[in-house]
Image (cartoon, rainbow, N blue to C red):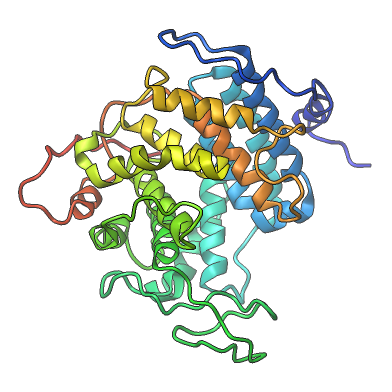
Length: 387
């Protein structure tokens, strides 16, 4: 047996410790900075669960970049220094493994492969694990592809379209835009929601810009279509099949502008998004959706809401009440590992505290376009550097 890095060996022991469920239902203090032990314990148990799934080679091969981003975000934006240190140690151990798994760009890499390598390499670099020549190779290879190769459309020329097919439900093949019957096996295809296309474009463009390897276009090119995604339909949670994608469009528009929970935002900068989040958080309670509730909570905190707000306290209690015995959130019976670790990640983000930086955004131009190219609008914030 190969020698495990000291951190991994320590965590193997830690994962077996204190697996009993945390106390549930303890109310958050209405006007106090102190937090009940149940919240800290719940967060740490959730983090241990995520790490335990990330050490499975099959899970890590499929979702390695996303795991690294999870650990980095928690490490870099947690007010709790102990939690930050735990997440960073986990992330660095996994980032070293990711570098071993992905030392170079494969000669047959397509646009999706390049985007995934950019995402993972950027997260690994943020965790302090550099990748040698990989970034230079990615710069060279990424320049061969167009925006439509990375995003399915070119946001410099058109808004998010409604004719991009999902992968074939029978054979898993990806088909060209506009194709409605799989060209490999003849199975009817379902078109991706415009919100889903837009959300993927936000994440891809943000990652490329942040890493310095542009993936077809810039974040400002994508965010110029945010006004076209409005107005947001209220009251469709649990009934509208597009509601989840709509909700994640709103949260990710906030994330790419606040640097994934680094900067404070003024509600007046994104009033439609702020109003949607406030109006619909309680609807996630009705449907038992802790995954969406977690994202709504941390984005609302970015706008200045705190545990003093009854809505935030109610959201925190909802999430605490739904933690599974193994420390996770979401459906414990699903075999889809993403549906296990990702709801746990968003629940942690909804519960934890953040050391917010002063008001600012990752890109003034991206914010201006998200506001609809307004000649006169909210005061422009001071641009903050995004690591």
